[in-house]
Image (cartoon, rainbow, N blue to C red; front, side):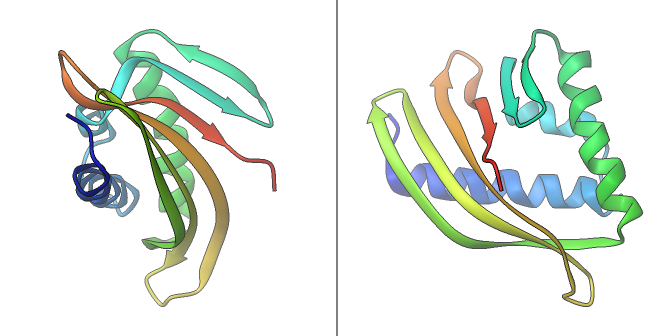
Length: 132
């Protein structure tokens, strides 16, 4: 059953795993423990239904590579909100600041995640990056 506290804790674990990838401490494929397949991704660049593990890892690898090139250190959640939709899903909306290890901001963005609780466990099923 999905509730605010569980989603918040789980999302924190996901962010730690994503940050470890961005710092080069973990392989990007480890993120498959957090992303559903299929994963629906929408950005200003378009809508992308990622239908297999390789596609999900490939798209996330692009983000990880950019983070590593920028000397990524950590992400800070500037604002977040959880909306429980039903017993199997919730929306997690947050604004993030990606920072170098010295605290200098690399980028800032807002995203909404549909977090679902299904047969494979809790997963991000939709990732929607907001327009700036």
